Length: 142
Image (cartoon, rainbow, N blue to C red):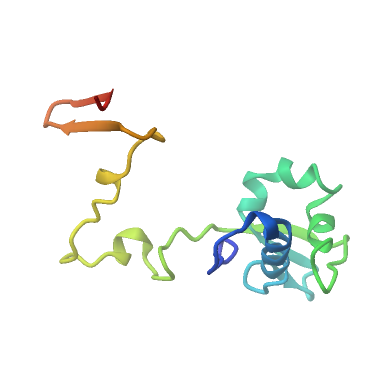
């Protein structure tokens, strides 16, 4: 598991801070997401912590100290850190996104019907696809 688990509920403005705190605590106490090896005195972290290191270091002097703010069992700050390879597989299926899709399944056309920009009421986006080029035109509905 390379990402924190997705919530099965909608985030609500009146509960947002509590919901974010709950999801943070859940992820940072997960033995799959934060892999503590007491024998080696090492913590293996998702590459997310490497890619966004400055975001976490803005909140605490070290990544371990950031984790300890939310963990029920603190990690000794003397432990070394490493990063396990990010798992890009889809929906828990091994072998990557290609393996997650069966060859006889139709290709999703979600992106074909998703606008590339947020549209105002009455505004449309037209995308035409040809072999040589893509033509894109946006206009307001009359």
